[in-house]
Image (tube, rainbow, N blue to C red; front, side):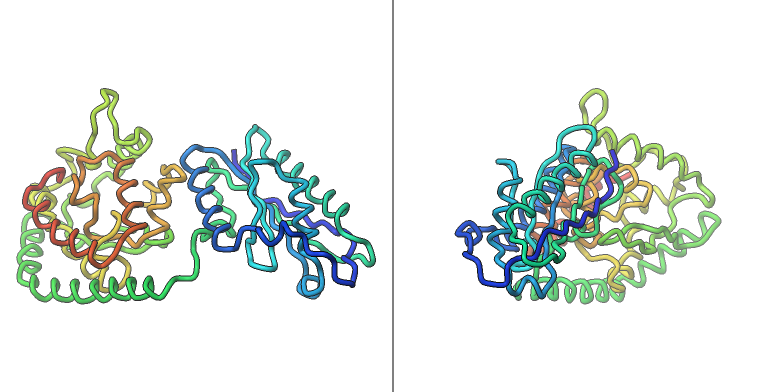
Length: 374
C-alpha cells in the first residue's frame, strides 16, 4: 500500500518563561548519529520484511527552543510511545524523533492516531503562559510504495570521517589513473575491435545505453555493439522481470543466469566479445568521466530498477557502478539476483582501495575462464 507522508502541526501553549526542571530522562536520549543509524537500520528492516514504519518529528521554533525545557517534550513523547518505539535526537538539540513500526491495513489511520496521541500529551505536559507553535511532522515509509519521503532518502548518511574522505579520494585517484592507463595501453586493441564490429555487421561501432548510476542518477554507458541494429529489447525486458521476481532461482530450485543464453539478437562477433568481456572496454571512458568506477555494482537498466524490491534499490543508492565487482569475480551471470544484490551491498559497506585492488587483480582470471559470461 502506498503511504505518502502526512504533515500535522500541533499548537500547544508556550512553555513558561522561567527555567523548568530538566527531566533526567532527557540526558539519556539517543544522540543524533545513533538515532539516525537506528533509523537507517529500521528502513533496511522494512525493505527486507515488507513492514512499514512511521517517523514522528517534534520541533520548536528557534526562539522558543532557546528558553524551553526539552525534558517536557521528551516526557510527552514517552507517555505516547509504545514499548518497542524508539526516541532520540533527529537533529541534536532541536528536533526529537520517534520511530514506530506499523502493522495493519490502514497505515494512514494508524499514523494519524499516533500524531493525535503525541499532540494530546504535548498539550498535557507543556505549561500554558502564551500560545506558540510546536510542530509535529509525520513521515510514513512503506516498502510497497515507489515514493520515499525525502527526509528518509539519505537517512544513513552522516558527516564523513577524515579517513573516509581520504579513502574516497584515493578511490577516485585509482579510477582516473587506472582508466587513463588502460585507454592508452589498449588503444591498438580498441582499434582492432572497432574494425571487427564495423566490418562484420551493419550499424555503429559503439552502443550507447542509459543506465542508473549512484543515487539513481541516469548516465549514458558506452559499449562495443554486440547486437544487430534495431534488436527487440522486449525479449531481455521480459526475461529480467521474471529473473528478478524469482530472485534468480528457477522452479527446480537451481540458480538461473542473469543473461540470456544463446541470445538471438547477438551477432557472432558479439558472442565472442561478450564472452571475453571486450565489449565493456569503452566503459573506461565512463570511469574517466566519473560516471562509473573501476570497481562497483553492475549498472542496471531503468526497467530493471522498476522491478526491484525496496531493499534491492539500495545497490543503486549506495555505491557508484563499476566495470567489475564482487559479483563479476565470484560467479558473474551464474550468481542469483538476490545473491548479486547482497554482494553489491556488502561491497558498498566495506569497500577500500585495497579491496578494489584485490578485485581488479582477480578480474582477469574471471574473464579468461569466462564462467557465467554469455
